Length: 438
Ligand code: SDX
Image (cartoon, rainbow, N blue to C red):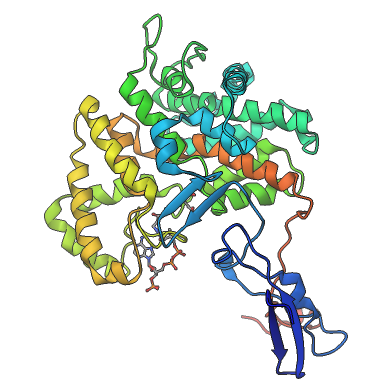
């Protein structure tokens, strides 16, 4: 009997089955069986065979991936094996985007070519400006981003040729390059300000700041502290293995839809308040609480299931999200420039109380990436409903890395889950006059 296997006895038939166990890089964390191997377990020849039932994929590996590893119990996050703390400290966002997509850190020549190509793909077709003008002045920026990303696909019909490596490469340049341009356009539209063209002299985040905040000055000069802080925030948000929006990106991409529409799907998933929309909800929650003395009552409301502690909890992290720890430190640097956000004190007090309270400790609820990021974004001058755009822009590189890994994985095909059908087996149609309904 192989040791790396399960022996399953089906008590309905008395039969036993040997199911091989697969391992990832961390044998104690990522061992799996092929669900397809369960299909042989039947009670009769016409039996479909066993499936795994797993609502919300709480314990289902949808793919093999070499991009990002999270160890939730230990609060570990690594991109291609590099600890997030080292990348945040020593790298920059575009270099991290290269690492996620190519699997290795770039040489100087590779880095310069990568930066050049992305920098020269930041402009968008003028019609995208007319498209953006069509939104109402108070349209939510994420609703605008979902739409403009999908609209962008209509300008690049060749992007459908997803199996051709050269095409994927060009679309990856375009999507990373144009993410900051589209993001800035949604911001300027809601402010009633003219759109600002990219400035290729600036860094990726400096150029983004230029397109957001340039006014009448001849040349925009980004504040280097804010530029660096935004770049670190982009690194922290770049990828996070098989989260909800990445699952959407992979699923839409698995039908060989183009990467713009797949990214629109990822953006739509990220928009939700339980996912990327949480950073916006944290600020709304802090405002609703109003003051430190109201925190105990809010905590009680959470325990009574009347509210969620937004920015807390995580499907994978059952320890402190390492990104939240870095963002918390980053806040001090930003506040030196912007002035302290008074909401920080309330957030710190909320965290202090929650981390001592049995309700949260028992459920292993810790601050996640969204708990402190919004406080920084607000101090930088971003409106609350724009925070998730600041999550989506850097996550574009992670989505594209995951999408490309899916497209090139010979084991992958169109995503099509099964179900356990619990509806009516069969019945005959009744004409409306014969239905005894009120
Ligand atoms: C992101 O997946 C990723 O990697 C996502 C992300 C990424 O980078 O892509 O990390 C980004 O989405 C971070 C999460 C942002 N969302 C929020 O901050 C919203 C608030 N958090 C929760 O909605 C919740 O924690 C989730 C959605 C994040 C995780 O939910 P799970 O894993 O489905 O956990 P669960 O709902 O099963 O909760 C377990 C228990 C439950 O209590 P019981 O019913 O067992 O008594 O904890 C409770 C939950 O009610 N709980 C919370 C809570 N989160 C979970 N109670 C109060 N406040 C919370 N925030």
